[in-house]
Image (cartoon, rainbow, N blue to C red; front, top):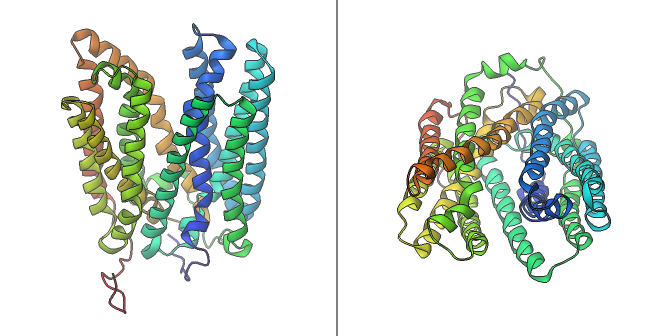
Length: 423
């Protein structure tokens, strides 16, 4: 396996990860707020679930297939930033098509134009983020990846928090589609420009291969990558066992009269907790290693998922949401660093990060069987479905904690004190 030497990073972690802030805002507002509302207008109440599911599935297919392909092409051409620029442009064009369809068209004809816009958005965003994902493992020494990964996790959580606030404002003020999509475009574009202008072209150039890239079979035969991939799948399964059903949990278990509002508040609590722990989790992992942080974070998330089943009321559930967020933020801050450390070859960073990204995207498809399990369980007794689904989430998290022990600790740890004596 190639082992490149790393000079000191030439770009700050805030500049390097600025684009992740914009993409987090982009996806939260688009997927959770605008698309569900727009689909209802196009197809009506009776078919909204079917067509929203179709739209989401089409996007998931692109998100699964495109990153490894574009990542491999970026590795072969030795270029990163041109792909980000082109993908960003297509992403913005797709938002324009969606905005036009949502504001000017109606009925099924308008819906299929809207679908076209969404596919452009998915294509452009994945086209850009595939080579972008390679920049942390390529530019940052292993001993500093925890810090850079923590900054990335913090900016993603901050983008989601801003998206949640924007969603509330959009609903409160009833902004027209053009304004809402324009807001997404601006918040996506400005941080992207910060990253594109702040990362030098020569620094972002893909490393010249010293050896041929590994085949997919060889990549998954490499134990560090295999176990990082498997554990990321398990943590993502835990997340998607709970996240899609929080609104139903608020209505059925917590008996909240306005479950949409109470769920929004709960999401804000989760995001606030993740912001609080993201940066510190990454820094700690640079000093003590990645896996101890994963052990704690996964155990905290599992415990919170189980305790939500016995929460005595909404205030207690909000406290548990903050606790879950603390674990989730610490996990995400280390997750990217652990994945970067496990890459076997510097000649295929973008392709391999694209393949690793599949471990997060594919479990999203589990929401359908999880929803069926929820419905079946609730027919067997009061809230039995929630016990099955939330209990399953805890098992996924704990399995991830146990199996991450198989990942070799390859990071060169930083000393607990710097030469000047400061932490």
